Length: 194
Image (cartoon, rainbow, N blue to C red; front, side, top):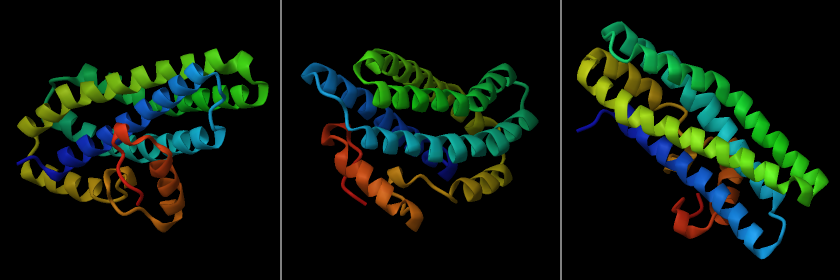
């Protein structure tokens, strides 16, 4: 049975992947229809990406999981350095997406293509990043970490969980997550309103 940390990371990755794919899908639908997207909805979705994965999920990986792996094995140090670098660049990347969205909202159609390109690059980057963690880092962690390591990690990763995984969110986020879940198309699979 996988440790709680591994389960939580995979759940949070799945929620984020669904959110990112939903953004792309919504943009594609509006492009086909020749309509402008609901900018408030896009802002809410990007706020989620910035608020949870960038500030909470990555921080736990970089500050807790990766150092434990470095202490237990020399394997994958270059990969861990790359993933840490990705985490460090993540906030800048999401700001670029948010800026491109603002430009699209303020300047209209001439900025649609640049926003869609910026979103597409961000989504590709993030999906590749998560796949690498799941394919390389989580199996390595399961092989080399001790039970004491897992106890520490499980405790830390169980706190401040991502509401998109079905975890009951802090009250300050209830309205945001209800709004996002209710507007994202059902086939993407974010589930019912919280």
